[in-house]
Length: 385
Image 1 (cartoon, rainbow, N blue to C red):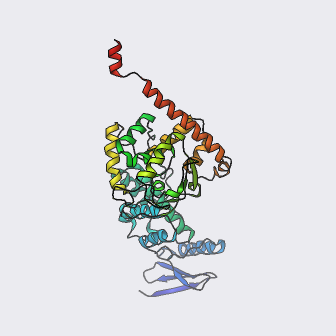
Image 2: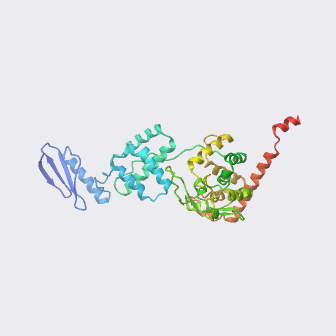
Image 3: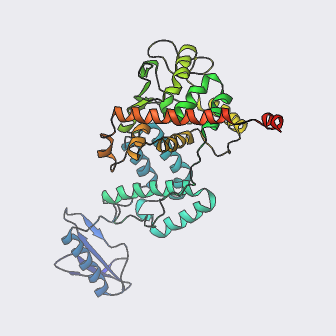
């Protein structure tokens, strides 16, 4: 189908096909020719299209129409590679891509991912999986597409659903002092200290996994958190820095843990100054899967709900520390939490203040335990009657 006639203009050119329809073409600032992907019914329609292209070039809003012809899967995987993520975050992102994003968008080009397609995908995912997973997946997709927009591969991010990336999780559960003690007893002497450090540290599981003998100061009753070793789904320990800079901290322990700390160092910690504080029965770093089975059994023995996780001991510790008189800034420092808004607060909660928090926590737990011992048993009530 050849051209019937053409018209030269100041910007671009329009031509009429033998069929009667019109086409338009233009040169970008680099001299590369571009032709409209559609034909026009009239010459004026073709000229209006060229005028819009010229205006975009003048304003600097023009985008190469072929720029978005980049496969999403390749771009997304490259995006993850370039981020320099922690091992656990990278594992999470790749799992979300594999299970929830790529099955829908993997075969599309970036410019084929439209707002309606994103809305349809999210609605389908909400029916298939939990709200938390959908929110995480949406946030990841939005972040990838935002980078594509910054790279000028797409004109606008198609992820524009208000509130779609927010998670609304249930209120975290807390345990009582008696329940924490019962969990420690049920797990046995090897894991007793881990429960107490998880609650009264309060330390993250991955921080506990990388604690060493030389991180413990028995005289000062402190534990230094320097590193973390989260376990990936492959079973590999990903030793590295803590979750944030605030995670590197010295935790002052309440005095009632003195005996447990001494016994654990004497009986169970790996030998040598750099030995791991917590190892399994065979002397190897403890495995999440093995400890998980012990945890679920102990949790059932104590009567805690099935949804109570080891990580919820941290929330328990937060709550008890607050009740003992700790301020929000104190508990954030103690737990190694970080945020931009809190950055200026941390420096005001020094070691002396942390000593006060630990002392208050010590008194609270001792009082709760004493109250439990003083409470009359059922046999005593029958005898008194």
